[in-house]
Image (cartoon, rainbow, N blue to C red):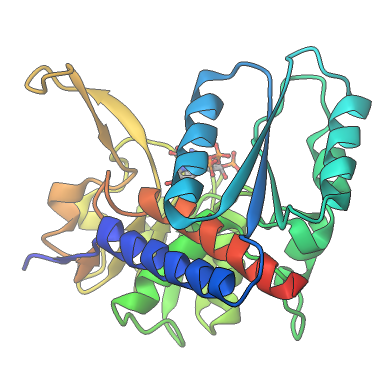
Amino acid sequence: MTAQLIDGKAIAEQVRQQVQEDVAAMVSAGKPKPGLATVLVGENPASQVYVSMKQKACAQAGVESFGHKLPETATQEEVEKLVSELNADERINGILVQLPLPAGLDEERVLNTISIEKDVDGFHPLNIGRLAQKGRDPLYVPCTPYGCIYLLEQVGVKIEGANAVVLGRSNIVGMPAALLLVRRNATVTICHSRTQDLPGVVRGADILIAAIGRAQMVRGDWIKPGAAIIDVGINRIEDPSHPKGSRLVGDVHFDEAKEVADWITPVPGGVGPMTIAMLLRNTVRAAKLAG
Ligand code: NDP
């Protein structure tokens, strides 16, 4: 059996198209364009690339972006002061503080400073707390986990009643992904570095979300026949046959797993493109909530 591919690139493009149409409708109704502020502290090269990708995506969708840079030496007070100014700026509907922050800065305090109405990354403790509580709804859901669930829903994978296994318990992917699945009535097992018999646990998964950052660790014989696999991992491995000498792979051994699963995301082109698409979607939601 060969699994059907979940084409994250195409699905993300549809989301971005919808965002563009929503923005155009807002503008033609006389409303301002939604605004997203990005805050980049320090010189982390990967963070610079992510921020510039987000700004380009904003421009393409008609969302106004306001880029703010602070030096590596910025103090906690300087970062929090900037966030407070952005909270008060009416042109800005969403604030994205690119993580990780340089060593010495207290990430939790910075995230706490963001006004919950502008927390389009969904990392504010209040939004995460609401996500974890029955009968409460967060204003925004973290973008990568939101993208994972969106992919499952778009291809029609039944979440309710499914046994779902999430590999990884990070604040940005694993834990919120597990919370989203439980809210959709899956029975969820969360695995981490101390989990015993990982292959055995994964073999029970109708839905597998892998977010551990370990290249191709999940093998084909771990997969339950007919499972749906969302591979969040992004890992670079050496490959002399590739022009660059290396290539990106996920946490799941794709070639083996696709022979057993019913649905699988590729890496790249699966979850990756969804993160920015969901950020744009959250920003438009923020603009609508602001009126
Ligand atoms: P973290 O390093 O924060 O978390 C990794 C998690 O995996 C931890 O919970 C850890 O367990 C667990 N883990 C690590 N090794 C093992 C193992 N051998 N067996 C079982 N569990 C293990 O990573 P992130 O959540 O930030 O990212 C995970 C992956 O997703 C990375 O490859 C990252 O690049 C990718 N990613 C992709 C995004 C996208 O597509 N847009 C966005 C964000 C991340 P413990 O808690 O015990 O340490």
